Image (cartoon, rainbow, N blue to C red; front, side, top):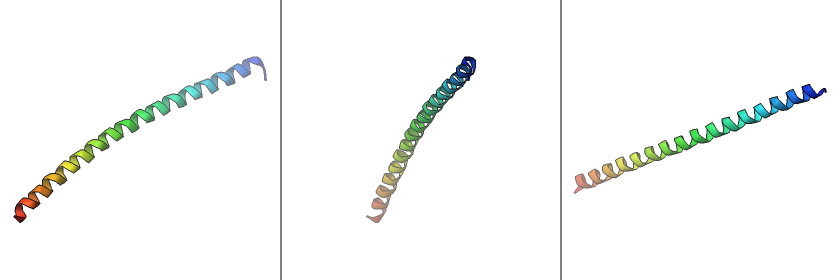
Length: 61
């Protein structure tokens, strides 16, 4: 390969590496948001179950 061809290949490989790094970062951020939202759903569900259980206990008395 000529030097210009090698440089072009190296530039393409660098861009691919940068694109993969950007994609990896975006995925991490997305997963972090999903984890936070899932935690909120779990908290909400736990709260609803707690209220439901206390109401059930109150009606059985």
